[in-house]
Image (cartoon, rainbow over all chains, first blue to last red; front, side):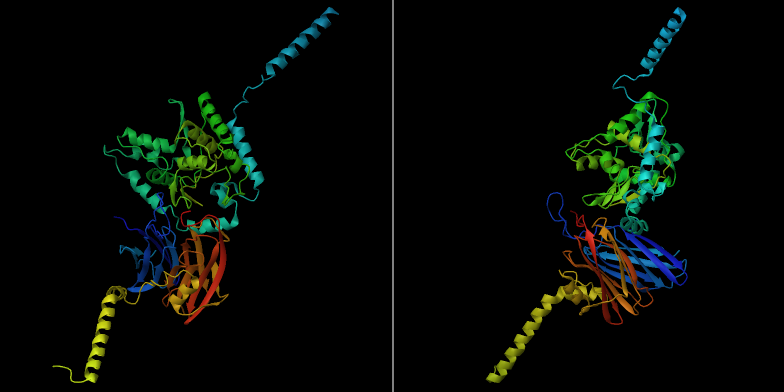
Length: 103
Length: 287
Length: 163
């Protein structure tokens, strides 16, 4: 199955800019469905970005992050063609990971 | 003497005849003139918003409000319709059970043609929209039709719109009285008040673009379909032109029609035609 | 061997009681232990994500309170187009930034996101958050072991939590 993670990593001079968009409902657990029942919480809790085996950015998320979450950051280093590994784990214990090439 | 009075009589008679001939009987429709309509429509909006570039009108409420424009720019960096677009691309090239695919139903394999829809089918005598054409393609090839409002239909139209991004709307009205009638009916629908709130489409989108109705900033009618289908934050998901028409009817406390009913297809025909020349920007994101 | 005196039995009783208590605590804490081990250094700040107020959340995350600083620059809209997707970003000129967090005071859970910034990563983050209603958005930056913040009120007319 295709990964839920979409990454755009671009090396520009000394820094690499990273944008990620992830397909995930990010249900907070505070919303009711049409029947009036609470939709249980279902959201990514931890997201990590690794370059050259080391974390360059990591996120601790709660249900207050928007559905299909997006994040943008930049780190010093990285060159075109290098790998960037992205992984997440959600509150149900589900995980996904992908490796993107820096453009 | 008799000649002069004869001439006088004749000329009076002629004048009377001329007046009778040119005088329109009360209640007769004005000549349907889509070209003049489109020109007047564009002029109305460009006069009302002189600072907005013509092509920018396709960005709806974002062309009307700076704060919202910035939020939209941020989202467009990695847009929320990305997943639907990908799904649409995959679906488009996947063959049906009988081996054919959507490519076989459309000119140029369905790539870069969205700006030609809707069109008037002279054989059938009705307006054909892109959504209708897609479901007909499915049914012709033994596949069940999709719901017109969301999910797969949105994904497919998102992909097709994407392949036409930047191309100007190019809606044609053939010289056929039925086509003119469909156009005119669409125009009438657009300007007719309905529902408990007694709003017409024009009440919001012609009279009050850029202003707020409760919490929402209203989009101008010019270019309003160019971004379809759209990912709306309000829906937390994608929706098609059909979805927007039906929900709009509900929002003004009217009874929504069935997606792809005659009236909806006619109003889509009218709205697309008067936006001819403006670029397709779909798929789009909206509040 | 029978106890010969009060002192002996008292001590034994104490030790036994103590051992029992430790055993009980140990058993009760097993699940916590397991998840803590699994998460290693990157433990998910469970408590911070349970806190209702931003003060409690910040205390749970950092153990101290921030001082407002104009070196923390937050970019957020005046009026969110929709509370479900509010783009908010922050950038700072402070040095040695190790953490950046986003909170929304009127959300049912104030803490929205907390980012770890390793050395070499630019102290700048953009994300999209949910806001239940008009509220202060607070960004906290941990730099050089100290805590700084910026606050901005963002108006929300359509609630972001499904309403």
